[in-house]
Length: 131
Image 1 (cartoon, rainbow, N blue to C red):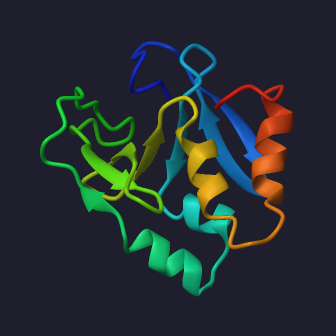
Image 2 (image 1 turned 135 degrees about the horizontal axis):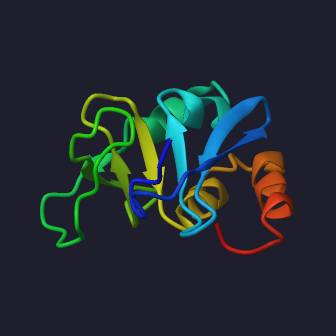
């Protein structure tokens, strides 16, 4: 699969907590297929509440990118505790795209008050750099 931002840059597949994530070594973006964010966050009420809080951003000027699965333009979605992180979501529910640092920021916000081993694994995998 090629990166939706770099377009012709092949992404590499990494396994994280039994979830395969697609990572672009060029722009450091991360693609999660549908359902993989839920697997990383865990199945619980807080996760359900967080996922239902996504808000489509209709005013951003950020360029829309194409889904690496269906090739249709993705929608911009605000996520996070204060809807302060802008990510890309496939309109056909194929998955989510996180620019560098966005997935890490989301995982910091949704640790549900416990040690976030997924966040720690991500930091280890990428030499403690922002994702």
